Length: 140
Image (cartoon, rainbow, N blue to C red; front, top):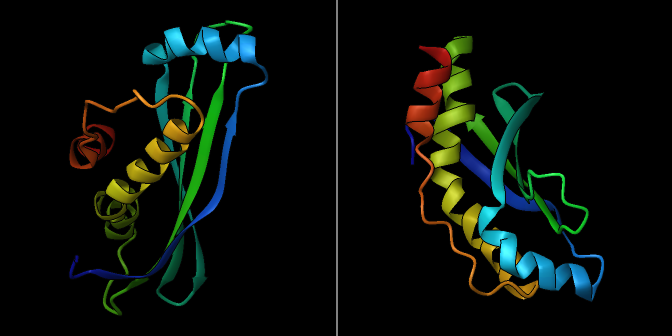
């Protein structure tokens, strides 16, 4: 656990896996290794020092193929900041980096479960996401 915040709760707010038909499934089965993982993070204050952090994961075909599956999940974390945390930059790093490092293993497990239960049991994420590096590149 991080000393600047505490996770009060976390849950899957929304989850979706869409493969429209068997023909698409057969096509996607061959091309799913080319699918891309996109992450979007947003937050909103709930009350003093309490923030809702939504991590939206999309696993999709970035090409213009007509036959495609789409997988998406919104994972919500409710965090409470320490009282002395007031600096906007510190809060930003907590939301975009620190919370993500703590919850992403659960997000990844849930997304893989969705993919495997959707008929794609061989999907694996080989590269781990380095939230520290992503944050540094974006804000330093």
